[in-house]
Image (cartoon, rainbow, N blue to C red):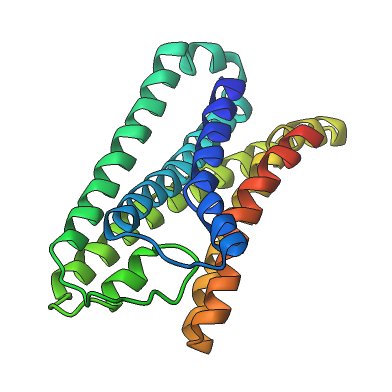
Length: 236
C-alpha cells in the first residue's frame, strides 16, 4: 500500500509542477510574460486540482502509517488493494470537483481587458482580488473550501500522529521505538515541508503585502517542495 500511495503522490507532484514551471521557464527565456484568458483559467484549474490532490494523498498516507503502527497484525487486512484504490479514487474525484467549482466561480467574474497579475502563475486568490465585479460569493466559497478541505485533512493527519506517538511510547524497547518511528519519518518530513512552506507563504504575504515577495515565496511550495519529496523518500 505504501508504494502504491507513493506512486500516486509522485504523479501528483509531477503534474503539480508541470502546471506552472514550463510556462515560467518560457517566460524567462522569451522575456514575454503573457498568457491568454483560457490558458490562465486552465492553469488555475489544474494547479488547484493537483495541490488539493497532494493534500488528500498525504492524509491517506497518514492513515496508512496509523494502521501500520497501531494495528500491525491487521494491516494487510485493513489496507487491502480495494480500500487503497478507493481512497485514491475518492481523492482524485474530490480534487477535481473542488477545482472545477473554484474555476467556475472565477469564470463568473469580469476582468479588465489588459490585466496584470502580480504573480508568476494564475493564482486563484490574485484572480479574485483583481476582478471588477462583486467577489463576495467567491470569497465565501474560497475560504470555506480552504477551511474544509485544507483544515480537515490537517486535522486527520494530526489525529493519526497523536495515535502513532501514543503507540510508540507504549513500546518497551528503544530499538522498537526507533524502528516504528522510522517507518513514518519520511511522511512526517514531507507533511511538515508541505504545510510549513504553505503556511509561511501565506503569513509572509499577509504581513508584507508585497506582490514580488509573495511570488518569490510561492516558489517554495509550488516548485521546491514537490522537488524535495522524491529525494526525501529515496534517501529513506
